[in-house]
Length: 413
Image (cartoon, rainbow, N blue to C red):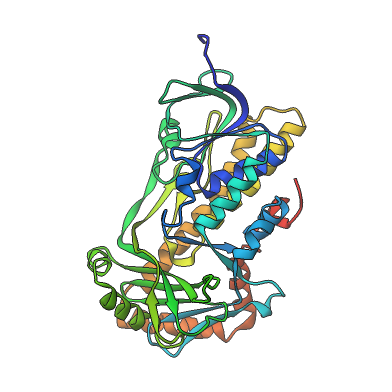
């Protein structure tokens, strides 16, 4: 191989400075690995209040990971706990009720604004000497033909690392450069995301109401500084209908919100900007290539019907962090193919199963065919009347079941 002029040499180069990539950098850096975190946008742009308008549901399992990594304390004051979840099917009187008290003293999850998460994570990695942030910067090339992986940036700089991790989203450059294809499809649905103010407190209750065009989710948020009660809205509808709803004037849009939210929160109104997102299912055919691993949206994108997208990425981070830290302490190669295959086998199986589940749920509930509608409503009522089954689904939704590594169990690396 010809001589290369590198910016520096790192244990791990993470491409993508979103929530998943930054969390991964903070965990690895905190464990003593040298990390390059490469992001196309400047840090300040990612922290703007109107950057994307989204919130994230952090499950109990993801919170345990963040606690063990020393990241949760700074997030906790802005996190709104989810103590109850109500799953309804339109106007049916049969519903499914998850009560956190049935499975312990912890909430089922927490809702946080993405902007708040980013700000806290950046504060953390700014204090970790072994993490080097390279932003704004765009990766233009990947070469894994030699003893290390080499990244070339658009400005000509080059970076060498034992392992490159693609955390650069659903249109991942790293995935494509590594020759990894995907399977999946676009849904005939888009989502409208906004923040809704409401007259009555939400009492830490989240609602998922399945309507024929798609689920309408109300996710509890902390009150605004002026005391306004707030909830995040994820409104899924037909791809042709969403642009029409998104362009409504404020009174008309609020009337549609009220119709879907019902009366349990009293009068509702819009207090945040509206954003729309196309929905898709996409799964990488492989999670690894020579000296390359994929995590989070670069590896898997699912329907938001269960609010688990980021949490699946956290489970990727959980396992890969443990494997990398253990390999470094043993003096082993961080690009070890056997280690990478172990990561792929475990995470691809779990993520594929969850992707299939969310796809089936969307197809089952996003229609108004009478026999299917009747069957699913009976099913919701039946699960609600069977405490052991209800608790099983709660633990699964909390991310408290299945194989977890040390961080996911609340232990330090």
